[in-house]
Image 1 (tube, one colour):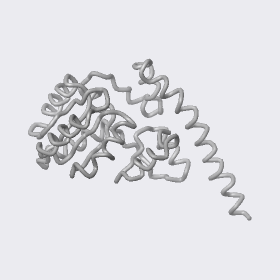
Image 2 (cartoon, helix red, strand yellow):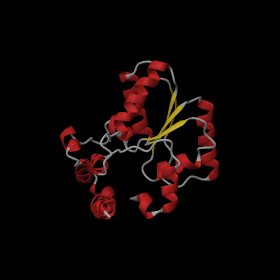
Image 3 (cartoon, one colour):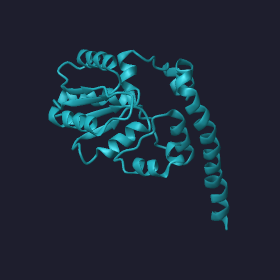
Length: 213
């Protein structure tokens, strides 16, 4: 929906090497559009799979996002779960636009750290713009993982698995953080349903009529 509202941001998304379905309703939508093999790639789970592989292969990782407290707890979690994992840098940028000097300093810190994979957890669309704007300055893999740091540090409660399977994780998160999320969901969710219904109608009904002609 962010890309639908902002063509410039849609271009940012389209330049990514991989774009995956983080939410169950997106997987349902893809299956209805005949992408039968579509599966969910959940950011927090992807984070753990990549961290496990990085620890096994000796690939240093970096963390960018969250708060100093959540990063400290997340690092402790990773060291406990994946002994030997190399966390080359952990940066919690302020929750405001950075000055050029600050951005340059953080970028240089990441470069100097030797991290090969950088997890970026500063929320959508901010993290996608950040990765896009740093793609030529940081020669490493960057993964936008949203709230993964907060989930795995225990600072934000994760939705129960049953609600995730039912596609109701958004409702659980809304109940947990109503002040922060209500505007986003009120703006995007109804429009997504309406726009997807129109797309599905065009694909299934109008597409069949054109084929018949």
